[in-house]
Length: 275
Image (cartoon, rainbow, N blue to C red; front, side, top):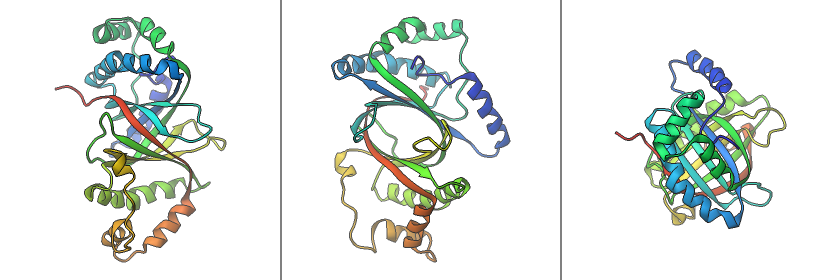
């Protein structure tokens, strides 16, 4: 984990080709870095991120190199996870190519008053492990954006073999409209779904995610409405009066299955661009 704010230029070139081919559709991306920080180093690491890392992220945002950035701390991730923090960088297009060493150093010195090498040396002194995932944002409902203190419930999904196109259609035409009602009704603040690009292959643990943003733990733990004429079933019938909510659930189970669900809390963030 030697670079937290850049994606390899070769990856950017590949994604640029995809962007040109889909010029009529705005394609957004999300890079997630999974990080393990030892308990005795967490206080110092968070202080460094909040006082230095946020400034660097905001400089990247102001320069148009990313749309937003946040650091999340695990609340409930379960047994077997090798990380306790994740960094999330959102892009309004393909992640940009790396800056030249001179341009990079100039940006770092402008934003935080230290060289790239000095920043990396300090940052990596806190980190014990790290790995990254690049995903394409398939759909979203942009309600109230997350802020420091927000909670994010992340579902990690495995798509049924041969059903990737069906997954995209299902998410965009059925799940997104339903979750737009959830945002409107105040069930959660915003929502997004992604499809993993890298890594890829049969042996990856998950290849899609859904993320629900909540303002606080009380909203996370709000019980579902017991009345079938309220909540998600009623909202689905309002949107699709000739469709069955149970058939919608069955279709979802056939297309993908839930690998794990985690709860995270936002502890630092930057964005949008300063005006």
